[in-house]
Image 1: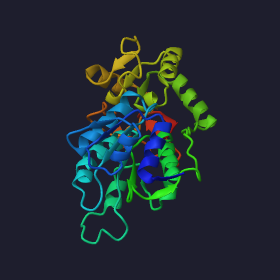
Image 2 (image 1 turned 60 degrees about the vertical axis):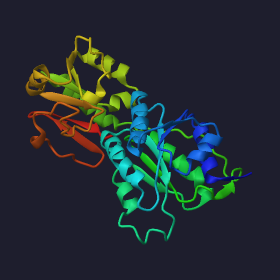
Image 3 (image 1 turned 180 degrees about the horizontal axis):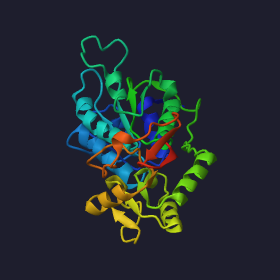
Image 4 (image 1 turned 120 degrees about the vertical axis):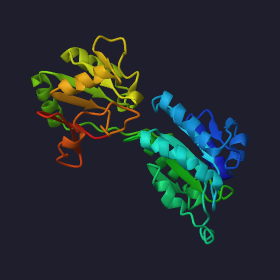
Length: 309
């Protein structure tokens, strides 16, 4: 059966369990969403469309993906408005599917704005639908990216939403994400360091929530009787009424950070983000990773290798 690209995307979103799409009503995919019965939440501008989808992905811990559409094309004001929303989602590691109008080949001669280059700076992956028959392929790739590895926004640019393809030639099936495990030797080394520390501390980030590992974190903290602090974005990853919970910010957090002789970092990149976490007291003295596969969270006397997200 021959269908247009916009209709194909709408049907694929329904197969992936997407219940609604946030938008500012100028993207050329929107009419097909309406025809296929996908509800749209109309925002005041394109940045809010990204922000609402971003918020949905965050509150569901990535178990359900927020989807938005916004204006694209040559010198698209909507895309420039949306840029800030995508930058925030990218910085915070939030999985959002952003669908926009692409720039048709050869039509960017009067533009000073390099769309592809700009979008790649605020996305985990920027896909450009160069052929209509690749619609299922690129949608599979988009959802695989959204569900695998470190979370982040994915952008799919559609230069011609009315182009047609045979829906039966490459039937779409929902995709799953892929997870990797640490090297067992690294885990054993971390356990040895943890058990040998006098004042260990667990520093938990939002990755715990996205991994669905809150109960595992609680079990670990109770097993080794180690206090826990979380980043601001990881609030809820560990029960805040638990006797081992120290807090997110404040003098008590600084006290535990400074007296610790070992910090086990879980689900955090340990970036110096002042608005989302308490700063570790030794950022300039952190030991460099020994390889690209392993990073290191350190104190002045001990280090624990941990797998990067």
